Amino acid sequence: MLKRKATDYIENWIKTKNKKCLLVQGPRQVGKTYLVEHFAANHYEDFIEINFKEMPSAREIFTGDLTVDKMVMAIKFRFPEKKLLPKKTLIFLDEIQECEEAITSLKFWAIDNRFDVIASGSLLGIDYKRASSYPVGYVDYLKLYGLDFEEFLWAMGISSEMVSFLKDSLSSKAIIPGAINSQMLSYYRQYIAIGGMPEVVQKYVDTKDFREVDKIQKNLLMGYQYDIAHYASAEEKVKAEKCYLSLSKQLLDKENHKFQYKEVEKGGRAQKYYSSIEWLIRADIIHLCRRVTDIKFDLDDYAKDDFFRAYTTDLSLLMAMKDFSIKQHIVENTLTGSSKGGIYECAISDALYKKGYKLYFYKNETTKRELDFIIQNDGKVVPIEVKSSNNRANSLSLLMKGNKISSGYKFIDGNIGISEEGIITLPLYMVAFI
Image (cartoon, rainbow, N blue to C red):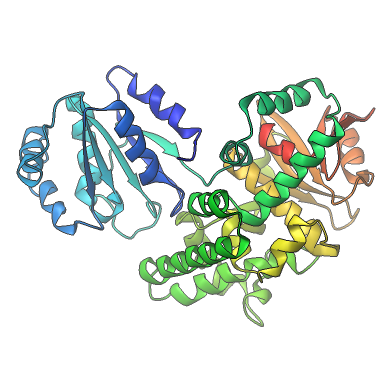
């Protein structure tokens, strides 16, 4: 079983007195069902799983009155072999987006508080099936992503002591021994080529075969394309898929990684395609990094909605859009030019997104100064540059000085260092720990 950080969150949730229902959200195939099933096996005497895609007839449980006694009775008729014991049985409502009244019922499960209820779903942000009454205030939320680099290291058998050593090195800004740093960079390049989708990672752990990895990546990409075709409106289906499949070209095949509609279709314009971008965001299929016109808190006040970069929600899906040979170049560190810079930018974006940061970038057409990423942490603006080699980060240095920012990060294919200007240079993989 792949070890996931989200397990700790659920363990804390289960200890909460008068707990709300827990809704596990996230993109398709990131391991939501697997996580809950294995958690239930270790923490409950009994487990009832209702998957509304596999058992559409189970929606009948949630028709009519939504009192807990009525729903419990209906579940007992449906699953006569189950005991359904308060606090000892976990009720798991999977693919809950397929049953709008089951979403509404979460309020009443939470108020009653006799049973622990976890729900899971994808595409909850779109108007596919909207609950008649959304249970605001009665649900705790857990956002699940694909594996991050730290979880990938666990999967590869790297000890917790080694991970702690890396975190301590970040805290102390101590140079990492060359052999360890080289090995971690090698693992990170493997991670970039594989991505964090659990099925992909497990296949790599089991086989170490990149061709088997590639097959699963492409199957996952086809699944995402199916979701677009199945759930998007007739007006958006083709446009959304074109936008999505253009991402590899937008991010890896050109110097300017700003999302350009002309890369989707010759003569393409925002007027035609922006609604499709919005749909992909709500469906958890892409995430954005928006341009800001100034580097000050709060960055949202300076963000431009019409000037952005768009990324896949996991590197596994980006890799599936490219030819198999790119994996070899990534792992062997033989990429050059815009592809190398683009790959590293996507990897840093992926890590920051999985840590829950909202992403921004800065670009001034007049001064030609730009920053790859800017995040906010504890009320402070944190600028970030990504370099394919240890070149001087002139824009980062000048913008930090001009905006009186005390520290920023430069991620490189190298080791730890710190400059007089307060620029903290880190190996690429250290983004997992900031």
